Length: 420
Ligand code: ADP
Image (tube, rainbow, N blue to C red; front, top):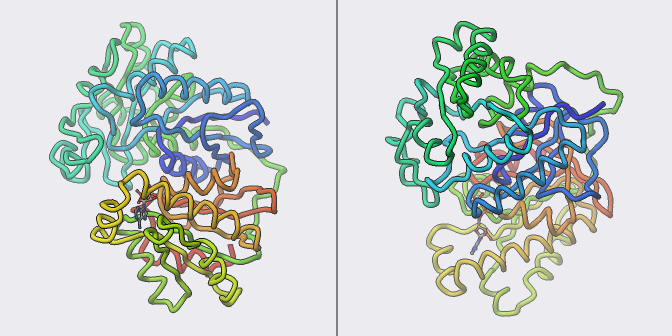
């Protein structure tokens, strides 16, 4: 079967999030890390493929080049439609890259009009009269106005987008969405006739997103967060697969954590509280040349193989600041990522078949070290945190890649005590 939906995501964990959304909609979904090359192989029989890029905060030219590379590859795999996934808080700066990347994808596809809808109702993100809300607050009144990289101080999506494109920006409001699929299609056609290229569409609920998804099904390029991806997925004709679903894997289980986010620190605390074996990596000792990875492997070999293990560099804000003061932020991160990447390879060599990785950057380091370019998406353990299945040179691996603040506090214990 040809691929139905292709998607480019503007960051790594956003890729996991949108892949989980397609899968919830019943689509067999693959996730590919980085711009695919001609030799990147898609798992058999997929309905959807997501290419996870790092195009949110890179210079616009790089974001455009990567996005077009992903689009071409997705078309080569048969994708009939390209979904551009960005954050449900419209994370971007006045310089972009949401407008620029969408324009490039539309130019590439020869398309005249697209839909934008970052609503994600389960996370409290809704769009009304073109304004983005976070629960009961306008985006610009929410804590996102203090985001360290992309502070969001305006809630008007038409205004935000107009600063990032030279093309017209319009709105299909909620009253039209409530009138149903045909009404939205007609409103989009009217915008296209008027030469308006980017159309923000209001949505308050998952039902609204299903309506918008059905109305946008024939557009070559559609843009938004994971919510509209699920709406589009539900509108796609279901495919009957002959390929079996990936199965839970037998073998040892491990967590590698490099995230210092509050939720990850809670998950580590719960792992200890459950009496499971855990080891903290001494980053300063590794930087001083001590064989910290070797010591961690010796520790691992001494553990009961029936129990999951946790090895982590994650640190409290004070500890983190102390390490960063000594080594510098970039050198500290490189040290941690190198340690966790090399441990991942050696754990898998030793028979780990279920591996949970905590942290967005850390996940990138681990998949790169393991040489994993694509995975098949399986069941979610928590919203936006699916198990995925990969093939490595030493065998199959169930891999869970978790963004820092994702997952319930008991995720590590629960996910690894289940037989998958
Ligand atoms: P999150 O998803 O929570 O943002 P990331 O993995 O993306 O997690 O980012 C965490 C960053 O912190 C990584 O670059 C990691 O290398 C770095 N890091 C983790 N532990 C330490 C530590 N003990 N000292 C210094 N840097 C660390």
